[in-house]
Image (cartoon, rainbow, N blue to C red; front, side, top):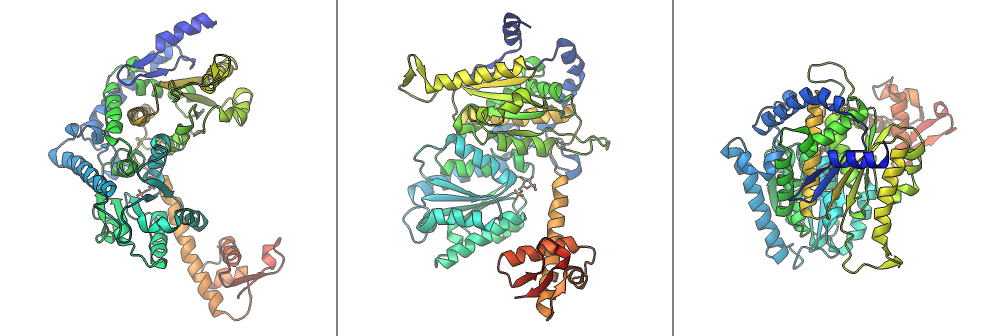
Length: 526
Ligand SMILES: O=P(O)(O)OC[C@H]1O[C@](O)(CO)[C@@H](O)[C@@H]1O
């Protein structure tokens, strides 16, 4: 196609949401009308599936759960009054709690006000709050936010050192839907210890966001507050539940505007017509690009620093939802779409070289923000500002990729603000739902993550056995004997890795022998 034909294609496929000022352009994906017609029956089913899901169907069949994250921004659509109350009550609780924290009516025992928020959680209990904090926090927010999203002691210490004496005025938010995630539990225990070391009580500084009745909920009965998480909201779609709204509100972000933006996008994506439904257009483009089998990766390139974490947020939303071995009929399908990205134009000086010329196994998604965010533009060259450069780079890269047969989608928003961020979240949540229907997978469970968790637990059990054997044995042992005495003769490699880690951390284990030849090693207590 020549430039004028492309311009026509651009106009033919351009989606514009007037209320949100959001544009979606899929003209640089090379599908044709025949492809769209071919997908129409699948989309008819996807629209029906969405309607059923929004009416309260058990959309997550193997966990027997409703999937209701769309009701979070439209409680009036909840299937019954009880579910509606599960949405509205936490919203009232959050508003009241945050107001009192900001006023200093709710305050820590040894300081006049809470100054900082320390959020502990992982996966869906961290990625949304992190993305939103990066995207929307003011330069001088009412409370600074920090995150612990791992069980890495060095990472935890780094945050604690940064907070320093302000620990006494830090509000700890422990977020875990299930209430039993080990990383989050460890973060909580580490913080409890940190408060104790400073002679402070942990409980009056802590709140929990978790499902009522969960382990964490039971632990938190004497904490400052508990905010319920709904059973019918999955972790990766929980940003607009208490999981994301509480920390956002504490940072002074307008959470009602986030909800409103998401609601507007939900409404726009209830239209049962591919061409005028932006989430359907995204799902269509993904299906086209990867042949309905995820053959191409999704590269997310926002040309705006504050959207840096969008790709990380989408990584979980898309990959945990769509990355499935079996389809809904039990066939082995190995579905999914790999997601990665960072930000432009920064990435142009890193991996865009491969995108333009290397293995063509991706499609790009550019996110463009019209407002440069400067009241007084500064011209660096005659008539040209930094923002003009950014705008030029996004156009240039899109064009350079297209010329070399690399497809792309472009989403344009007027500004990064609570409304557009809420809308972007909803846009992708619903695109994932549609795509899940198109490829017939359950987008709402995550059976695959359990295997790694179980294996990690068995390694920790083995470590306890190994430590007991080492402590009780006077003479050095080789790895095979140690594994045998620990009751796992087959697990020599695992035992080797356990003792190597213990030795590296001064945990009363020494390894003697040739480190490049593990079978020569003798293990003893030290
Ligand atoms: O909020 P939770 O229950 O601690 O879970 C955290 C994350 O762990 C997962 O269950 C995967 O292990 C995600 O789906 C979830 O977002």
